[in-house]
Image (cartoon, rainbow, N blue to C red; front, side, top):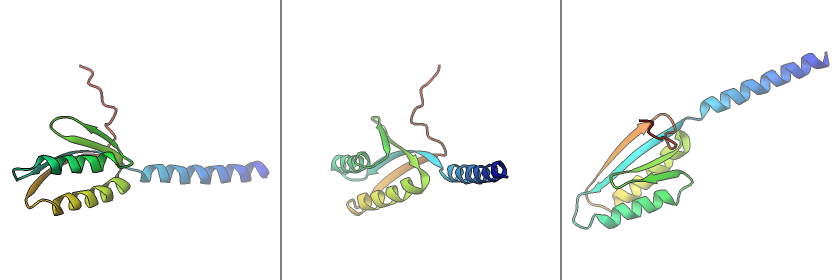
Length: 110
C-alpha cells in the first residue's frame, strides 16, 4: 500500500513538473533600433546598455542586438525599455524578429 501511495505522489509531482516546464517558453529576439535623427548614436548606445544591464543573455553585432530568455519575463522587460527609448526620441523605427526557441548557442555547421 505504501508503494502505491508513493507511486501516486511521484506521478503527481512528475505531472506538475512537466506542466511547469511546458509553461516556460524560451524565445530569441533580434532588435535593430533606428532613431531618425542626426544624433542617433547615443540613443542606440543607451538602449543597448539597458539590455546589457538586464538579467537576460545579450549578444551584439554591428547590425543588430539579440536578446534571449523566457517569453513571460523578457517581453514585459522589452516593452518597458522600448517605451523608455521611444520617449527620448522624436521619431524612431524598431525592427524586431522573434523566434520561439533559444538560439543563443547557435553555431553554423557549414
